Image (tube, rainbow, N blue to C red; front, side, top):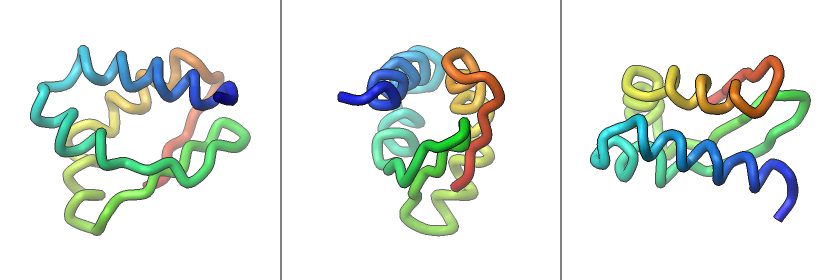
Length: 77
């Protein structure tokens, strides 16, 4: 496991405690990580519908969790 894998696992723990079980299972579990460079996290989503759902329902929580472990995080979907 590299450093970001460890950080991502911590972020998942944070998200699991801050989101409903349904949101976590439906929106967070399916996410893929395309890259993480220079504090920019690029996540892969299935389609525009899920991108909209993640943006509306949990993007702020993902950003807050990421901010605990990085200096100036950005998230791209």
